Image (tube, rainbow, N blue to C red; front, side, top):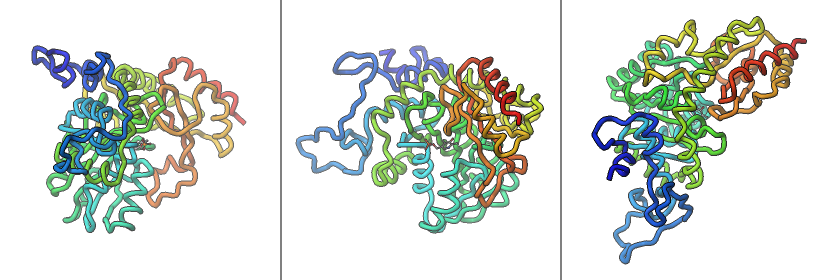
Length: 406
Ligand SMILES: *Cc1c(COP(=O)(O)O)cnc(C)c1O
């Protein structure tokens, strides 16, 4: 039947289906019991056992058994995300950080070494810089992975994993996925890419050689700011290990309700990403020309150090540079607070990739041992450009500049 092949990402005539068609159809289907054309939320904790359960592997994720072992709403979303990322399989977990922790704890053993980006999500930094070395004897080296030679110099005989985030949160530094994948593979190591800022609409790291791709589903893929989730897209072999170690035995499973919400939110990913890309570029250009602005970091700007490299990584003709940018102001401590206070559309809150625009002030008293580049030290804003009318967002920023002048 054609609908069921479309649910697996194949068209009736074997021509490849487009990204938007797959975003809508893969992972959805007709409910066998009711005929509903939207799959239901299955909230049961447990599933009926067969007549003779003695052969069951209680740690298996292959059949419906117990919800922590895997459940239907998780699997529908996994099918879609593996398809969109271009990987054999995907494991959907409770949060983006659970996806990171699953990858690090599953792929690294005592005595192994990992190389990771100096600009990353804070939990990746804490896990790799502090928790895994102290508790599990894993060696790590932090480097500026936007400098491929620095990555090469950091590799040791026991290096098993390179973890990069590109563009990195919150500096927007861009790393060379293909070149670092080559370095990793030459050293017998794996490359893990946190692709949260791009989503698979803008960049598909697996196509560029990454072995493991992480998404915080909390951000663009859900897109509506109302559910946490994370995904590890990778080979079938690594996915099976992740499920055994982290999902079943550490317990980092996503709830059925959140998996359902994220699957629903994800159907508009291509439309939303096109708009995030376009509005963020317009705002980055506008900010760059303002006298109040010290700098703008956004790889979509032609003068950004990561621009050419990121352009070469874009997955499709209508991909862009994402909806997140960082910028610094010529302002003192209270000037930053006055600016945020004067905004009325853009909300002061953490997170990113939501429908609404979000801004957060970062960096003034940074505690990291490996600080951000110099221009970030005096404090800066990370702006997640939402789906509001671009004119309204620009008027909101303009008004805040005018009223926050001391
Ligand atoms: C938010 C974020 C994470 C963590 O995701 P959660 O869903 O909040 O756990 C990881 N990486 C990046 C780049 C993020 O922006």
